[in-house]
Amino acid sequence: MDLVGGPFAVIESDPGVFTCLIRKLGVAKLSLVELYDIEPWAIDHLKPHGLIFCFNWRDDLHQQTSEFESPEKVWFANQLSADACGTFALLNVLLNCPAVKLGRRLEEFRDETKEMSGVMKGLAVANSTFIRDAHNSFARPADLRGSLNTIASATLDAKKAKAKAAKQASQKPRKTKATKAKPKRETDGAADVNDSAPGNLEETYHFTSFVPFAGKVWELDGLRIFPLEVGELPSEHTADGWLDVVRPALRLKMEKYGGGASEDAANIRFSLLAIVDGAYETAHDEWYWWVKERQTIENQLEKNPYMDWKSQVDPELLVLADQAFTTDSPGYRLLSTGAQRMERDVEIMRSPPNALPRLWEDAVRSALRTKVGVEDEIRRATDDWTDHIKRTHDYEPFIREYISTLHAEGLLDSFLEIEKMEKRTAKKAKNNKGQAKPTVYREIEEEDEVSDAGEDGSDDGWRPSSRRK
Image (cartoon, helix red, strand yellow):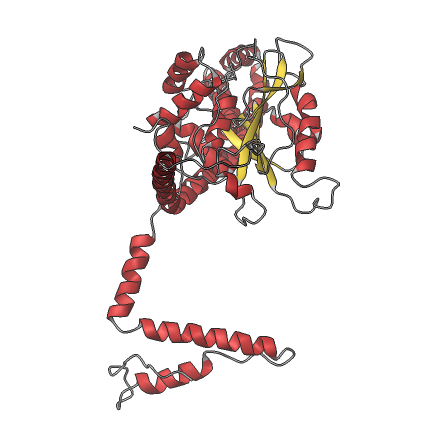
């Protein structure tokens, strides 16, 4: 059995992917959005629970100098599995947010691991089939096969290294000149150390998270030994103002990994995601508020049978009322502002009868406005799920069967010849700049028209032509 469980595959750094991931982990009423600026006007109104910073990882020159266990009992897990930094960053934020309603399984996981060290928490995450399966469900099939291949290659390399070491140990040791051992370089848990070498063209990205907890702002990087304190909050009992504390740290990160005042400023290699309250739940609560408003008003109007209230309202709103209060919502009917709703119902009941038609019109107009937001969120969720299906679908069997069928029907050579002709034409056009670009398919189409047609002008005698000019 592997000490750190099964493999974690690479997943895309996309807010839709991470939103679906936290939903699959059982966390409701939260979503992730991408931020394009960290100024107050761009982020403060979102009231994020935490931030996730994705950057092009390199050897970090800023090493943690203070090594101490956090007395505030911050939930922090060291990343011990490759390609799992995104999920570790999510968990390091979610499990430090008391206001977030975790699912049953994540709550049990937090309670079971809260007294563990960071390393043991990392082992618990890596060995959790629930978390690993949720993570891998958003990976492409090719990435899943790649993660398995990486483990197989690492296992074979370890066996070879062990056999080589045993062979050298059995041989007579030679006298060699003593040399000073070089310090080991810190490596990214999401990739091999060689990925960050100058000669390696493959880019390695890593996730780190920022979260307010216990009166302080923390940077939780799974590659560090312990949490890194960013700064203190004005009050220990509230997270208000934590974005003002984290902004300087974010600016330093952005300048370091691109986007600052350096020469590499235009080469931005980072992204910033915010964990915020679910946009659908927020929009639906606002819309459903007016649904209950209309019901209460109509109930009051129906109590007066001598009042023809429908003749006192806008006739267009009477027609649009049925559309305003119906939607393709998936059945969410819980109003988070229940106490405020009850107070509002009491105010409506105390209102004079002649004021109720105007209140009814306001409710219909507000419902029409807020319904747009609900439908937009439903459409966005549908698009995210469609992209997820496309991303995780395995196209390899279809491509293999398609190419095999082309070969069996004798059509593959024709396609390959067309590709060779395109390359030759592109090379000739590159050498003859300033001249008109020749048409590639004109002679092919004319030849196919002649060869495809039979004596009677039909195409029954069609055969793939192997001649291409």
